Image (cartoon, rainbow over all chains, first blue to last red; front, side):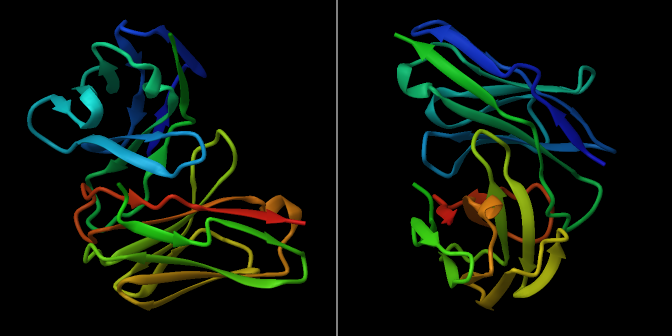
Length: 116
Length: 114
Protein backbone atom coordinates (compact mmCIF):
# COMPACT_ATOMS: atom_id res chain seq x y z
CA UNK A 1 0.00 0.00 0.00
CA UNK A 2 1.17 3.51 -0.72
CA UNK A 3 1.48 6.28 1.86
CA UNK A 4 2.63 9.86 2.16
CA UNK A 5 4.13 11.70 5.12
CA UNK A 6 4.00 15.45 5.51
CA UNK A 7 5.86 15.83 8.78
CA UNK A 8 4.98 19.41 9.66
CA UNK A 9 1.51 20.60 10.63
CA UNK A 10 2.16 24.22 9.82
CA UNK A 11 4.85 26.07 7.93
CA UNK A 12 5.36 29.74 8.76
CA UNK A 13 7.43 31.87 6.42
CA UNK A 14 7.97 35.59 5.97
CA UNK A 15 6.82 37.13 2.71
CA UNK A 16 9.67 37.16 0.21
CA UNK A 17 11.50 34.28 1.85
CA UNK A 18 11.86 30.82 0.29
CA UNK A 19 9.05 28.40 1.03
CA UNK A 20 9.54 24.64 1.40
CA UNK A 21 6.83 22.10 2.16
CA UNK A 22 8.15 18.62 2.84
CA UNK A 23 6.80 15.32 1.56
CA UNK A 24 8.12 11.77 1.76
CA UNK A 25 6.40 8.74 0.31
CA UNK A 26 6.26 4.98 0.39
CA UNK A 27 5.09 3.00 -2.62
CA UNK A 28 5.80 -0.28 -4.40
CA UNK A 29 7.73 0.36 -7.56
CA UNK A 30 7.96 3.74 -9.20
CA UNK A 31 5.78 6.54 -7.88
CA UNK A 32 3.59 9.08 -9.53
CA UNK A 33 3.66 12.14 -7.25
CA UNK A 34 1.35 15.13 -7.07
CA UNK A 35 0.99 18.40 -5.19
CA UNK A 36 -2.36 20.10 -4.66
CA UNK A 37 -3.23 23.39 -2.97
CA UNK A 38 -6.48 24.26 -1.23
CA UNK A 39 -7.31 27.88 -0.54
CA UNK A 40 -9.86 28.65 2.18
CA UNK A 41 -13.37 27.47 1.31
CA UNK A 42 -12.24 26.18 -2.09
CA UNK A 43 -11.65 22.83 -3.77
CA UNK A 44 -8.24 21.29 -4.44
CA UNK A 45 -6.19 22.82 -7.22
CA UNK A 46 -3.52 20.83 -9.03
CA UNK A 47 -0.05 22.41 -8.80
CA UNK A 48 2.35 19.93 -10.37
CA UNK A 49 3.27 16.28 -10.76
CA UNK A 50 6.22 13.99 -11.27
CA UNK A 51 5.73 11.06 -13.61
CA UNK A 52 9.15 10.42 -15.12
CA UNK A 53 12.10 12.28 -16.52
CA UNK A 54 13.65 15.42 -15.04
CA UNK A 55 13.69 15.31 -11.25
CA UNK A 56 12.89 19.01 -11.02
CA UNK A 57 9.28 19.69 -11.89
CA UNK A 58 7.89 23.18 -12.44
CA UNK A 59 4.25 23.95 -11.83
CA UNK A 60 1.68 26.69 -11.39
CA UNK A 61 2.11 29.99 -9.50
CA UNK A 62 5.94 29.73 -9.45
CA UNK A 63 6.05 26.46 -7.51
CA UNK A 64 8.46 23.65 -8.22
CA UNK A 65 9.23 20.30 -6.65
CA UNK A 66 12.24 18.02 -6.67
CA UNK A 67 11.89 14.27 -6.86
CA UNK A 68 14.60 12.44 -4.90
CA UNK A 69 14.35 8.69 -5.33
CA UNK A 70 17.05 7.77 -2.83
CA UNK A 71 15.39 9.84 -0.09
CA UNK A 72 11.84 9.00 -1.29
CA UNK A 73 11.01 12.67 -1.13
CA UNK A 74 9.11 15.19 -3.24
CA UNK A 75 9.46 18.56 -1.50
CA UNK A 76 7.53 21.55 -2.80
CA UNK A 77 9.41 24.83 -3.12
CA UNK A 78 8.89 28.43 -4.06
CA UNK A 79 11.81 30.89 -4.16
CA UNK A 80 9.87 33.88 -2.83
CA UNK A 81 6.62 33.37 -0.89
CA UNK A 82 3.61 35.65 -1.26
CA UNK A 83 0.89 36.29 1.31
CA UNK A 84 -1.53 34.83 -1.23
CA UNK A 85 0.33 31.49 -0.97
CA UNK A 86 -1.20 31.00 2.47
CA UNK A 87 -3.23 27.81 2.04
CA UNK A 88 -3.38 24.08 2.77
CA UNK A 89 -0.99 21.98 0.70
CA UNK A 90 -1.42 18.26 0.02
CA UNK A 91 1.12 15.82 -1.34
CA UNK A 92 -0.25 12.65 -2.97
CA UNK A 93 1.15 9.47 -4.51
CA UNK A 94 0.00 6.66 -6.76
CA UNK A 95 1.98 3.57 -7.67
CA UNK A 96 2.84 3.25 -11.35
CA UNK A 97 2.60 -0.54 -11.19
CA UNK A 98 -1.08 -1.03 -11.84
CA UNK A 99 -2.74 0.24 -14.98
CA UNK A 100 -5.98 2.00 -14.16
CA UNK A 101 -5.30 2.28 -10.44
CA UNK A 102 -7.21 5.42 -9.57
CA UNK A 103 -6.47 5.56 -5.86
CA UNK A 104 -4.44 8.55 -4.74
CA UNK A 105 -2.91 8.39 -1.27
CA UNK A 106 -2.88 11.87 0.29
CA UNK A 107 -0.66 13.19 3.03
CA UNK A 108 -2.29 14.87 6.02
CA UNK A 109 -1.70 18.32 4.57
CA UNK A 110 0.43 21.29 5.59
CA UNK A 111 -1.00 24.65 6.49
CA UNK A 112 1.27 27.34 5.06
CA UNK A 113 1.11 30.78 6.63
CA UNK A 114 2.98 33.57 4.87
CA UNK A 115 3.56 36.49 7.22
CA UNK A 116 3.54 39.99 5.68
CA UNK B 1 -9.92 27.61 -12.92
CA UNK B 2 -11.49 24.20 -12.39
CA UNK B 3 -13.47 22.64 -15.22
CA UNK B 4 -15.36 20.39 -12.86
CA UNK B 5 -18.60 22.09 -11.85
CA UNK B 6 -20.47 21.15 -8.72
CA UNK B 7 -23.95 22.17 -7.56
CA UNK B 8 -25.16 23.25 -5.11
CA UNK B 9 -22.27 25.03 -3.41
CA UNK B 10 -24.04 24.85 -0.06
CA UNK B 11 -26.73 22.46 1.15
CA UNK B 12 -28.44 22.20 4.51
CA UNK B 13 -30.61 19.14 5.01
CA UNK B 14 -32.48 17.43 7.77
CA UNK B 15 -31.80 13.83 8.70
CA UNK B 16 -34.99 12.66 7.01
CA UNK B 17 -34.50 14.58 3.78
CA UNK B 18 -33.52 13.29 0.35
CA UNK B 19 -31.22 15.51 -1.68
CA UNK B 20 -28.67 15.17 -4.46
CA UNK B 21 -25.29 16.65 -5.26
CA UNK B 22 -24.47 17.13 -8.92
CA UNK B 23 -21.20 17.26 -10.82
CA UNK B 24 -20.38 17.94 -14.45
CA UNK B 25 -17.18 17.94 -16.49
CA UNK B 26 -16.57 18.62 -20.17
CA UNK B 27 -12.94 17.59 -20.40
CA UNK B 28 -13.72 14.22 -21.98
CA UNK B 29 -12.57 12.42 -18.86
CA UNK B 30 -13.80 8.85 -18.41
CA UNK B 31 -13.07 8.50 -14.69
CA UNK B 32 -15.09 10.44 -12.13
CA UNK B 33 -14.82 10.46 -8.36
CA UNK B 34 -16.57 11.46 -5.16
CA UNK B 35 -14.46 12.45 -2.16
CA UNK B 36 -15.48 13.55 1.33
CA UNK B 37 -13.35 16.10 3.16
CA UNK B 38 -13.53 17.23 6.77
CA UNK B 39 -12.01 20.56 7.77
CA UNK B 40 -8.21 20.69 7.51
CA UNK B 41 -8.05 16.97 6.64
CA UNK B 42 -7.13 15.23 3.38
CA UNK B 43 -9.93 14.14 1.06
CA UNK B 44 -11.24 10.60 1.57
CA UNK B 45 -12.18 8.60 -1.49
CA UNK B 46 -15.80 7.42 -1.58
CA UNK B 47 -16.56 6.22 -5.11
CA UNK B 48 -14.90 5.93 -8.50
CA UNK B 49 -16.68 5.54 -11.83
CA UNK B 50 -14.76 4.36 -14.85
CA UNK B 51 -16.52 4.51 -18.21
CA UNK B 52 -19.81 5.08 -16.38
CA UNK B 53 -19.44 1.93 -14.32
CA UNK B 54 -18.82 1.91 -10.58
CA UNK B 55 -15.29 0.60 -10.15
CA UNK B 56 -14.49 1.51 -6.54
CA UNK B 57 -16.78 1.79 -3.51
CA UNK B 58 -14.77 2.45 -0.37
CA UNK B 59 -17.30 0.78 1.92
CA UNK B 60 -19.45 3.87 1.99
CA UNK B 61 -22.77 3.62 3.93
CA UNK B 62 -25.80 3.01 1.75
CA UNK B 63 -27.29 6.37 2.70
CA UNK B 64 -24.90 7.68 0.01
CA UNK B 65 -25.87 6.47 -3.45
CA UNK B 66 -23.81 7.45 -6.50
CA UNK B 67 -25.07 7.61 -10.05
CA UNK B 68 -23.31 8.25 -13.33
CA UNK B 69 -25.97 9.02 -15.98
CA UNK B 70 -23.41 9.63 -18.73
CA UNK B 71 -19.72 10.31 -19.23
CA UNK B 72 -20.04 13.98 -18.24
CA UNK B 73 -22.31 13.77 -15.21
CA UNK B 74 -21.99 12.35 -11.73
CA UNK B 75 -24.58 12.53 -8.97
CA UNK B 76 -24.50 11.69 -5.29
CA UNK B 77 -27.91 10.93 -3.82
CA UNK B 78 -28.26 11.55 -0.11
CA UNK B 79 -30.87 10.03 2.18
CA UNK B 80 -31.24 9.74 5.94
CA UNK B 81 -27.87 11.32 6.63
CA UNK B 82 -26.36 11.82 10.06
CA UNK B 83 -24.85 15.03 11.48
CA UNK B 84 -21.39 13.47 11.21
CA UNK B 85 -21.87 13.37 7.43
CA UNK B 86 -21.54 17.16 7.39
CA UNK B 87 -18.46 17.86 5.26
CA UNK B 88 -17.19 19.22 1.97
CA UNK B 89 -18.02 16.81 -0.85
CA UNK B 90 -15.62 17.02 -3.76
CA UNK B 91 -16.20 15.72 -7.23
CA UNK B 92 -13.20 15.04 -9.45
CA UNK B 93 -12.37 13.65 -12.85
CA UNK B 94 -9.41 12.30 -14.81
CA UNK B 95 -8.49 10.41 -17.90
CA UNK B 96 -8.82 6.71 -17.20
CA UNK B 97 -5.90 4.43 -17.84
CA UNK B 98 -2.27 5.00 -16.82
CA UNK B 99 -2.18 6.18 -13.25
CA UNK B 100 -0.02 9.19 -14.03
CA UNK B 101 -3.12 11.03 -15.12
CA UNK B 102 -3.97 14.11 -13.08
CA UNK B 103 -7.17 14.16 -11.04
CA UNK B 104 -8.94 17.52 -11.31
CA UNK B 105 -11.24 18.60 -8.52
CA UNK B 106 -14.32 20.78 -8.42
CA UNK B 107 -14.93 23.52 -5.86
CA UNK B 108 -17.02 21.21 -3.74
CA UNK B 109 -20.45 21.17 -2.15
CA UNK B 110 -20.62 22.13 1.51
CA UNK B 111 -23.12 19.85 3.22
CA UNK B 112 -24.59 20.50 6.65
CA UNK B 113 -26.87 17.88 8.18
CA UNK B 114 -29.11 19.17 10.96
